[in-house]
Image (tube, rainbow, N blue to C red; front, side):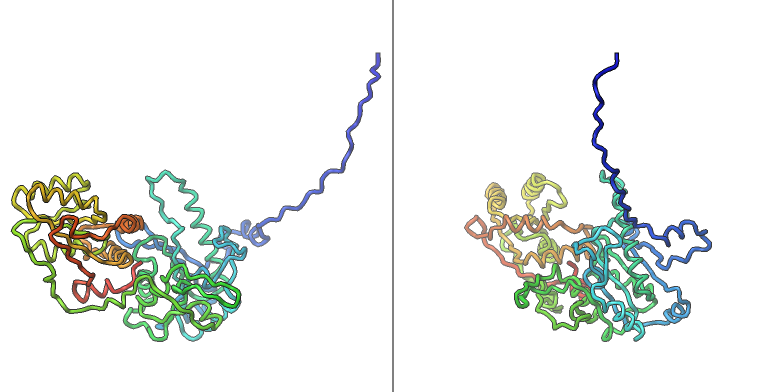
Length: 451
């Protein structure tokens, strides 16, 4: 029997209109894909890597661009002793999207429309054009022992290269881009990239035309200001201004150079010019007053405690107790107690920021029935960070091969610090203001900006 049920057809709608997906693949890239390698245009940007020392993986990425115009390339081989150096981000380019950081290699535009023509004019005025950029977000060689994905780091470097190649191609001037990816001698304000460019272009550093050279960058330490109803934020750092000071060339901001704006006020957290070299070699700031005692240091990392020990207490036969060397606090107390039992005086070369920690050393002195003195190093934290970095990055000044300390080490001291008082049980509290001690050659290194 035939069924009386009727099949109800669903409403029939026209198929959705297919939207054409916007492709990022250009006709030229498709044509390039099918073009034999021998017929493809030469890649104008050649990339290489540099390493700060033989024991460290490469951290400096270098892209050298040479225009297709052979005549211009030939002219560029002449020695140019005036250097016009530029930061990259927020100086020559910015993101086209408005994002603070762009992930897409195509997400960039000139910081100002005048940038290419200004650089072209400098080149025609016989300037060497270079780009010096800190790129701490890039990792050229991930630690093979790290558990994080390695492919992501490589992709990020590749995208950066693509973006920079596009920038250099549009600029179309013989130039080199240096990107410092590590926290080593190449990172501004340190002068490692400057030394590399001088070697690359065969310009002895003492032959550079320092007076007419220039460095342009947005990190000038400018303070926040109000322009009408608009607030202009302070600069994130002073590293570009400090870099120019280190290499000895004039500095200017992008606003001053490209837009001819007036300079803004700036400030530095730490100013090396306030600590000039002095030949005063008077180191007699510590007098031994007891036949045997404990001398307890108090001060942040990098305050000069170890230098004070080697110059003042080591000649007086004090035994040094240092937790960086002994590794644990318990080991420090054991070694100190053994030395005291052997009739030696000891110097506790640790930070000792709080009264509770210092009380344990006072108790040890009482146990051995001897006086304890305190030496308080009143070195500002910003100066300490400077000292720490100078020590870590200059082997002749770093006999214990210490590495740069993390910011946490300084913040931790600052949060726990209590000013030492004689009433804690000290015979006296000797206050030591920081003063550089060393040779003129050592001060030439120390007297640069390193952080």
